[in-house]
Image (tube, rainbow, N blue to C red):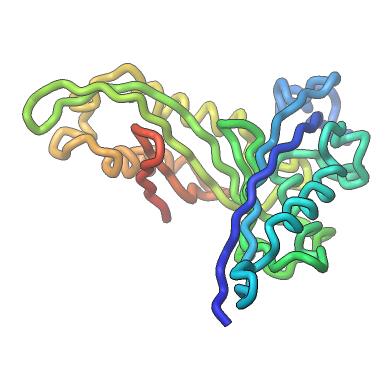
Length: 264
């Protein structure tokens, strides 16, 4: 029987605090920054779940959409309008980062008897950050095992001008997604420290391209400025600054709905 994938998106709201009880307050603030706020902070999460299954010859679906929405809403009731640190049983020994929450949701869905097998799960904390786990990343891992793995991606925006092939100056507003994939640290609950990631991207890329004429940059002396060459330039600039985990993917877009990606 033919198989297909189906993706469903749902929103929910939760609050959390990044805090390692084995560290003193000074180290927690240094590592987590504002995310260590004792009063917690909230997010409007967006969950994208992709399921893979056999197409029913009668319904033409891998799962009834009404049933799918009901099941996912039941799952998210455990997290919606909750303090993840205090109101759920999942984070008594884990920091409720986006990565850890994505892994928890994955294992809940994998075990659900009425769902086709999850193929991918992407959890947006906001418009600038998402964590993703997939069947390839998770495999048959035990949810209690450490370390689990995930992909984490961060969005950055910049504006720049360049000369076109006809010599005219063109300006664009760009966005770039920087993604890395690796083990989730048991100390931080993160694949990569976001403060460090922001610092590297800001100093190595944004300081060089934002509000600049890219045609004057030596990297584009003999090549045109396109989304593809920008993605490769950002990759080449950042890759040496990523060790563990390594840089996984760079995407660049100058208009909604179209994105160029450079990856390992």
